[in-house]
Image 1 (cartoon, helix red, strand yellow):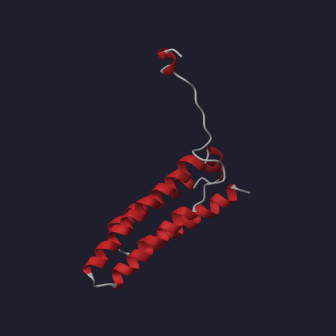
Image 2 (cartoon, one colour):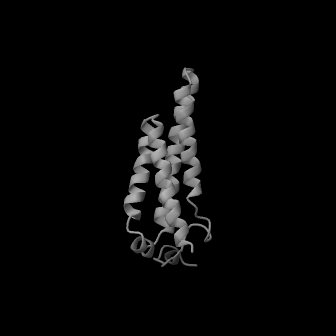
Image 3 (cartoon, rainbow, N blue to C red):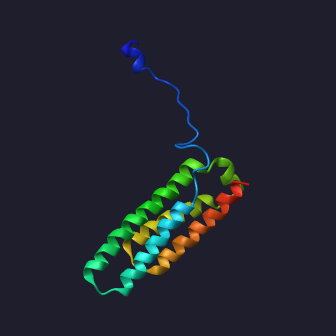
Length: 130
């Protein structure tokens, strides 16, 4: 094979990163439940070391929530889904912003809002699977 062939442009297409059917908002929900639990444990404890660990875990899980939401938004949902559910863009924007806000606070209301937004995404997701 010529070296010029290795670097020549090629058209590559892929439907998704993994085989169809692996997408599920449950991944984001589980991480968001962990965020909420860490907030609750933080607020219930006076042990500074424990609280520090709770914050670190909560921040990591919040970032995972964002990751799982972005994968759904960018890899699973298609223009036809947005046409059928025009609120999707704002819903994903709001949910990822809530996940980011959860990194900065231990207010359980933020985690509850995040879980509510993920539940709305979940409802739409399963409607698209029908």
